[in-house]
Structures are given as C-alpha cells and as structure tokens.
Amino acid sequence: MSLGIIGILEHLGAKFKQPIKIHRAYLCEGQAKVLFGNAKDYHHLGKAVDISIDNVPLSDVFKEVESLPEVTGIGFIPQENHVHLDLRDKEREIWLEERKEKQPLNQRQREQYNLL
Image (cartoon, rainbow, N blue to C red; front, side):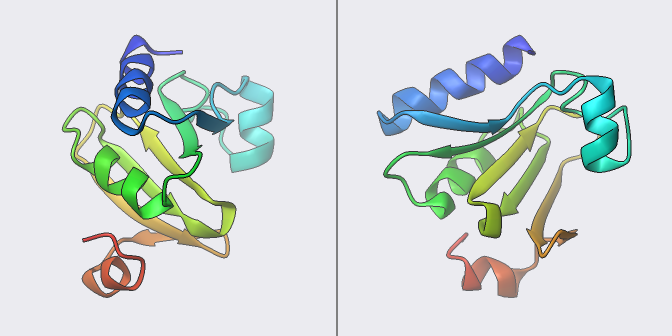
C-alpha cells in the first residue's frame, strides 16, 4: 500500500474522528482482472482505496477527499456506499459510478448528491 494513501487515510481519520471502513484496497493481479477486466489498475499498484467513514455522510467524505490536491482519481459510488480515491500519475479525474457505469461527474449530479 502506498505511503501516500496511508497518509490520506490518517488525515481523514483525524479530520472526522471516526473509524474508516476500507471496502477495497490492494488487489492481486488475478483479482484485479476478475473485478475490473484489467490486471493493472491502481488497486493492483497499491495506489487506490475505496472507503466510507462511520457516521459521516458519503458526500462529506467525497468533499474532503476532493479538497486534497494529491488525490488525482476520485470516484463517488453511492450505490456501494463508498468513495474511491487513487494517486494516479495523470491529470485529475472525478467521476460518478451508477449501476456499474462510470461517467464524469457533472454539475447536476453534484447538486443531486450534495457534492458542492
């Protein structure tokens, strides 16, 4: 697991003072391929984690993660009750995943899910 991810989790724990639930973190190559159809994703590289925080609205978790400039991949996945965050070496990407379909997060969705 990337030390950058560990630092972000420490920050979130200190900020919200609640236990962090890790839904998914490091995945071996075989499991990544089964879940995502790609053996080389950010979970496999130890640079991604899917989380929620006990007693904290998912929208608040998302907004705090979005405020951290080092997080360059942010996914809001309300149906699975977690936020994906990763440390990709590319331009920042922010998305919404609904019914297993990933799409760039737009203003209407931000309003709908209280992500402003």
